[in-house]
Structure formats: C-alpha cells, structure tokens
Amino acid sequence: MRAIVLGLCTAMVLVVRVADAQMPLPAAKPPDGAALFKQQCAVCHTTNSSEPMRQGPPLVQIVGRSAGKVEGFRYSESLAKADFAWDETKLDAWLTNPQAVIPGVTMIYRQARPETRAAIIAYLKEQN
Image (cartoon, rainbow, N blue to C red):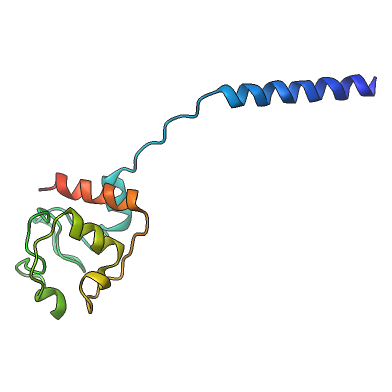
C-alpha cells in the first residue's frame, strides 16, 4: 500500500512539473519612472518649479537645460562651471556615477541598473 501511495505522489509531482513547465510566465512589467523618481529622487529634487527647492535643484525641464544653471539654486563649484546641456546620454552617465561626469560634485546617488536609469530619464523627459 505504501508503495502505491508513493508511486501516486511521484506521478502527481511529475504532472504538476510538466504543467508548470508549459505555462507561460507573465511578462515582466517595465519599471515605472514616476514611482522610481518618487522613491529614489524626490527626497532631494522636485519636478515642479512652484515647489520650494530641496537639497538638489528642481528637475522640471531638465532635458535640454544647461547643467548647473537653475537660478536661485547654489550648485557645487564644479557643477556651476559645467559646459553642457542635459540630454539622455549625459543623464544616464550622471545617474550611473555623478563624480565620473563632473569630479567634485556633491551628489552621491548612483544607480547601477540600466532599466531603472532609463525609466527615470523617460519620466524626466515627460516633465519637459
């Protein structure tokens, strides 16, 4: 009797495993840029120029804007001297490692995951 029960249990496990192997996995949802911005960036930055400035400058209309040039925000000396406009490539490099883009900046955030950086940048582009 014990052998029959064991055999039935083994057969049931195999059926479940075969069924699981044939079921398609749900598609992964792409990261939500707004939620990621809120979780990772909004402590220091806003996307609304009417809100008070935080530790970092507001990021509304950042794509195409000159780096280190928001009126009323006090940038680090090295960022204030920057001579470029923000685009997707610069933002991606910046979010990867700000100090590699401009040595001496005070921003310490780093994001290693390309899909997270892409989602945040896409969200910032929507704010333009």
